[in-house]
Length: 132
Image (cartoon, rainbow, N blue to C red; front, side, top):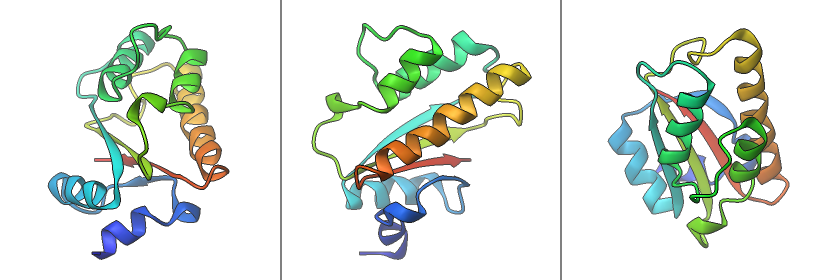
C-alpha cells in the first residue's frame, strides 16, 4: 500500500486540502483504498444551481436530488447508492476562491462540506475534499 493510499485511510486526518499530487495518482490511490472518487470540474461554474448540478453529476446523486442546500447536505451524508466503499474523495477541480458563489452561499457550501467530513468521521469513514 503506497503512502497516499495510507493517508486516505486516515479517518482522523480527513478534511479539506489542496491536492498535493496528480489527479491520476489520486485516482489510483483511491481505487487501491476502496474509496469512491467524485471528480467535479468546476471551471466556469457560477451560481448555486450550477454548483449543485456539478456536484450532483460528479457523485451521481439519485434523480430525486432536490438541488438545494438541504438536499446537498442530505445526499453527501447518505451516499448509499455507492455501496460498500471504504471512504470518499470529493475532488473539486478548477474551483475559484469564491466557488462562483455569493459570500453567503459560499459560506453555506463550505459549512456543508465541513459538516460532511465530520459526519463520516463519526461513522469511521474518511471523507476528503481535495482542491486541484
